[in-house]
Image (cartoon, rainbow, N blue to C red):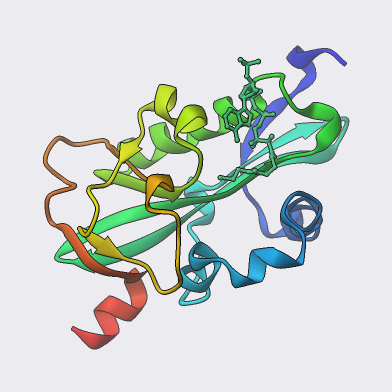
Length: 172
Ligand SMILES: CC(C)(COP(=O)(O)OP(=O)(O)OC[C@H]1O[C@@H](n2cnc3c(N)ncnc32)[C@H](O)[C@@H]1OP(=O)(O)O)[C@@H](O)C(=O)NCCC(=O)NCCS
C-alpha cells in the first residue's frame, strides 16, 4: 500500500453505503446508544464539511461533521471518524480530522466539538471542555468531551444541553 495512492474528497451521497459499513465495522451495534449518535439523529450532517479517504476506488475512511448548538453557542460535532483496519496507523485518521477542521474554519465555523480520546485528538488541537459547561443527551465520560476553538472565544458561549442545531433553531 502506497499512502500516496490515498485521496481525500468531500463526501457524496454515493459514499453512504460504504461509510455505513465502515462505521458498523469500527463501532458495532453499540454506536446507536452513544450520546453523539443521539445528537446526530436530530438532523442531517454537513456533507460539504465531511470527508472520505479513497483507495483503489473504495472508501477506506470517513469523518463526518454535524452542526450542533448549546445555549447561544454553535459548533460542529466531529464524528464518527473511522478507518478500515487494514489502513490504520498510516496517518489517515489524523489527516481526515485536519482536513475537516480546516474546511470548517474556511466555511466560517468557530468551534469543533467531539467525544473521543484526548491522547489522539489533543495533538490535533482539541482539549477538554470544562466539567459542567455542557450536558449531553446520554451519559459520556467527561474526560472525552473535547473542543477545538477555530476562532478564539467561541467555546465560552457553548454552554448547556447539546443538541442538533436544527432543533435549537426550531425551539428558539
Ligand atoms: C481511531 C482511528 C480513527 C485512528 O485512525 P488511524 O488512521 O489509524 O490513526 P492515525 O494513523 O492518524 O494515527 C495513528 C496514531 O494514533 C494512535 N491512536 C490510535 N487510536 C488512538 C486512541 N484511541 N487513543 C490514543 N491514540 C490512538 C496510534 O497508536 C498511532 O500512534 P503513533 O503515531 O504514535 O504510532 C482508527 O483507529 C479507527 O477507526 N478506530 C476505530 C474507530 C474509533 O475508535 N474512532 C474514533 C472515535 S472517537
